Image (cartoon, rainbow, N blue to C red; front, side, top):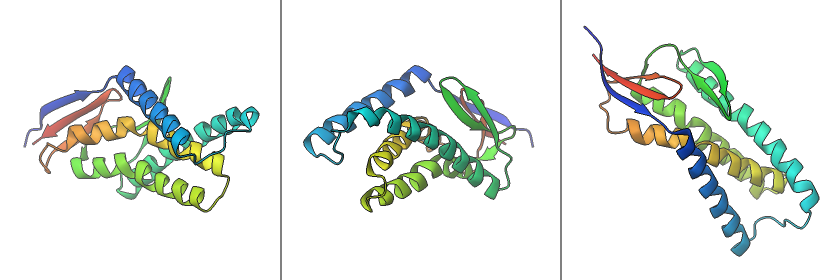
Length: 167
């Protein structure tokens, strides 16, 4: 049976950055009205933020890779500044691709939220939670693009989006 490409979804890096910035501003405004974190120690906030970003980038992409490997796929890690990513050199069933895509958002946000609630390094966990959620904007976008496609379709990651194949 011959495979046929039925859709090509390319995402805009500018749009992803804009969505992330909006989410960051919303989180800042919410923290103003419902203070979760005391930002009085401003001198150390930048360090905590940098540590959170570095941690989340590594762990977020690692979770994509681990979930992909659990499904028997071989993840390929890459960097295309300002983005880090996991891609694949083969097509993946749509449902599995969606699970791989959403895994870091779900797993890491739960972990960071629980640790925050337990009082473990509150500023750091707050920044990790926020950074992971902002960083998952592209993952959410991919999921939204793939949901309308039929269950039997295959997804090929193109580093700039995805192609959807049917056969």
